[in-house]
Image 1 (cartoon, rainbow, N blue to C red):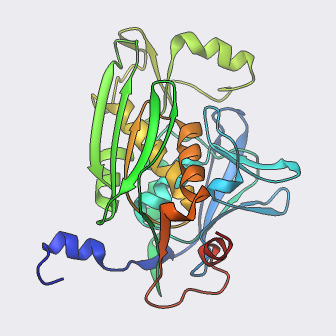
Image 2: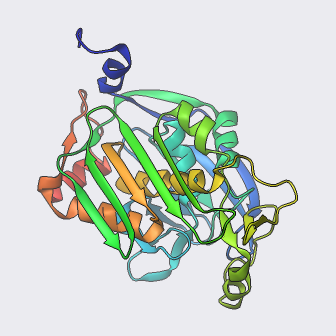
Image 3: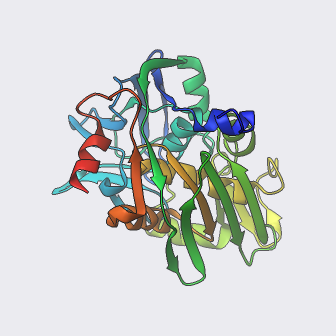
Length: 316
């Protein structure tokens, strides 16, 4: 690596697995259910990955793309054959954990939906900061994308391309509402870039859609305290936006959380246009549907035998 720039050499170095240093918990309201819920993040052994534990049901659900059971307006994971065994709106929790570089954690929750906090990932990142992060003296495997994989729906698309140095991301959006319009953002994902560029960007909706959402039993916990609401050229939140392109930043935040369901860090370039939770999940399913699309870069030191990616690679 002597001939590489220092930043590229650092990105090629294998990552140490990391978990939380101590348990941490919070309470809040679910965006769609409106139910008050308690959530806790706990340390987990190397090789565990991220696992959601429904303490009210006594079940655990691995945070993986193949456990996604619904992706309308949010990402929902569940267990096959158990309709009640679900956790919804996990994308901000996953984004915070992935953005902070946490590989292993148990997320305990006593209800069907994660709390929305202020509509961003900042609250969960604050919890991680309070708990602290501990290195686990085991190297992390990574998923290397070997050839382009693309999924489309109308004008929207999501794509993964080979990329040697970490995880590069690009997102563009286009809305008729003048307050949003067309926005685009590109960044190299790291704990620093996630914290500075994405973590505070809030979820958003159109004022014209709120009544229909609530009639369908959704957005029951939504308010101007946890979502940006747009009406044409107006932002209805009294304090306005946190940044001028907050909308595309939140879409990229969602993509970080959705793609963290790959189960291990991606070495790839992600490109999305008008993509959402459903298309992001379809992209991961398309990636892993063909073993020629990817390979697992093995950790220099063998990870524990129950590693989810040792099992997945063996089955591919």
